[in-house]
Length: 98
Image 1 (cartoon, helix red, strand yellow):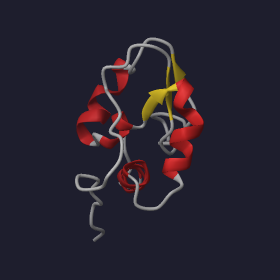
Image 2: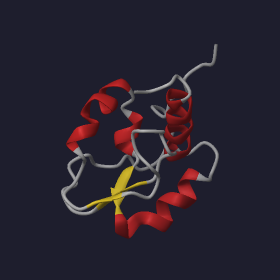
Image 3: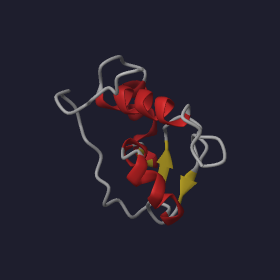
């Protein structure tokens, strides 16, 4: 059984979930749920609310489009909150999300 990683004590920027402008999802693809690099014009998509409850890290991977390259670097750097959240979403999606 794999242990869920935690970003609670990792230094780094925590994204605001109050963003209402154009946001891009930078987490991994979750089959039949959401694809990486999908842009939403009016903030977080409401149809994913249940998924946000089941895996709160999904919501953390929506960032302003202007921060795309900055956050991609953080995802690829081991130990950053974005890297941990990305890994947690992969584990979540392996459970067969619906």
